[in-house]
Image (tube, rainbow, N blue to C red; front, side, top):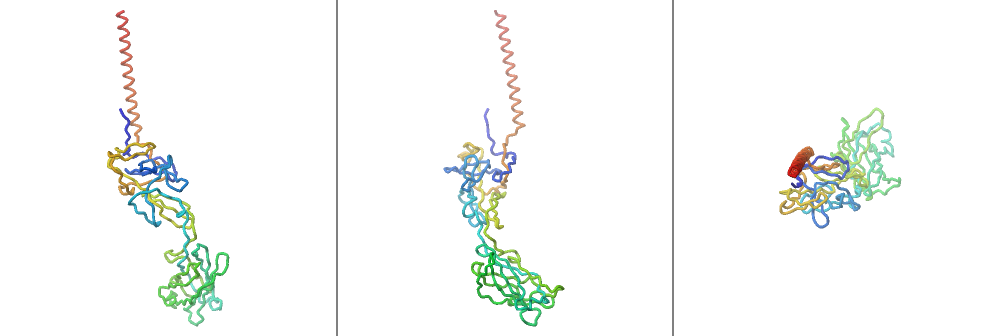
Length: 360
C-alpha cells in the first residue's frame, strides 16, 4: 500500500530534561520561520542561538510568538515574530531605590540614652537610585519634655557603602505620640496613620516614606528599646533593589517565557505562539518534521496554546505516535502471507517439473 503520517494523534512523552525541549499537549503546532515563510511542527527540540533567540536545534529556524512590552504581560494577538530571550534590554534588571521604610519594636522610656543630647541611634539600610547600599542614622530622643509618651526622631546622617558621609537636605523633626495606656502609636507629626515622608539626597532616592504604625512605647524590664527598621512598607512594597543579572529562564504551561534575576526581580519576556488547522492532515511535508500550510489544510489559526485547552511542557519531547504492537502484528501477518505464497510457488514449480519429466 502506502505510508501515511497521522500527525493529529498525540505521541508518547520522551523525557530529555533539556530546558528548551518542549512538547505540546493538544492539537496545535509550533510556528517557526526560516526567513522566507512560516512552517509548522510538533517537534519542540529548541535551543537559544548566539544572538539570544529561541530557534530550532536542527536548522536554526526562529520560533515565533509575541514579545512583552512591559515585562509583565503579553498581548497574544496580532502578527508573530522571533523571540529574543537574551539581549541588552533584558540581560539585566535595573536598580530601584528604596521608597519606604517600616519601624517596629518598642521604645522603652526607661532607656537612659533617650534623655541624652546624642539620643539613641537607630539605623536603616536603603538602596539608592544607583542600586548601592546606604545607611541612614536616626537620632531618637525623649523630646526634651516630661511627657513619657512623646518622642522625637531626627535624620542625623547618611553614609554610603564605604562609610563616606552624604550631604543631607533639610528635614524637620518627626514628633511621635503614643497612648500612655496601651503604648500604641497615636500619631507621627500629627498623622494618625503613622506615616511621614522625609527628604533624602537625590543619589539615595530623593524621598522616603517612614511608617511608625507598628512601633510601641511601654516600659520594659531591661530599660533597652528594641525599635528597628525594615526596607519596604508593611506589604513589602518599595523595598528597592540593587542591579541584577539574569540567572534563569522558565517556560510556563501557557508558553509564557519568564526571566529571573539575581536581585529577586522577575520579568515576562515573551509567549510562544501555536497554530491550528481546520484539516491538519492536509499539511504538506517540508522535511525535518516541518509542514507547510496548503489549501487542503486551510490557513493557520494563530493562538495562545491554552485557548483550546492545550499546554506546553518543558524538558520533554513528543515521541512517535506509531502503535508498535499494531505495526508488529501487521508485519507478522504480511510475513506469513509472503511465506504462504512462496510455498504455493514452490509447489507449483515442483508439479510443473514432474509433469515435464512424465512427458519426456
